[in-house]
Image 1 (spheres, rainbow, N blue to C red):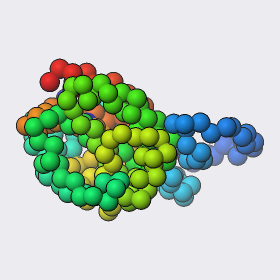
Image 2 (image 1 turned 30 degrees about the vertical axis):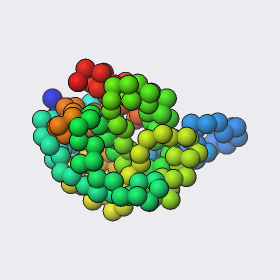
Image 3 (image 1 turned 60 degrees about the vertical axis):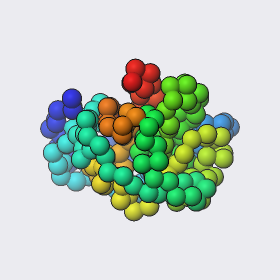
Length: 217
């Protein structure tokens, strides 16, 4: 996937610093490092999305456990989505084995690629514990297929176009609603949520945190 307490935001200053010049440098693309210019670890959001605006009250810290419609001890609603091969997959299909289900912002973004590769590298540990790993984002099946092929991802990626399941589960957004949240759920063999972990900007931590839970179920 106890909850982090809400904190108040500071109001943005009306004085803007001079724009600093920057120079681009080329770097050789490597496996698990996408060639994208995204400034954040999630969606490729336009610059206008981050314009100064009155700061609303923040719902919670960006790391840790965050409240949502699906909570620890609950049985989340079932869903049926298409995987990277265009096949329909239902959550109920996995009942009888632990499931690590993670919502992520988008394919081919820096943080999401690091997270997917980290799940891939620890996949045998999840399999040894009898668990399934499932990733969900709003990308379509074709995007998921290319993403899985490029980084050799051995687990299921589901397409939640329109973010219907994300909304039903109550996955919180970040950056004042401009960035889909990165939240991971651990379900036991009965389909009951045992753990929820939210950390947008340290995507690889999701793997270590959920492995601890899975190995002790």
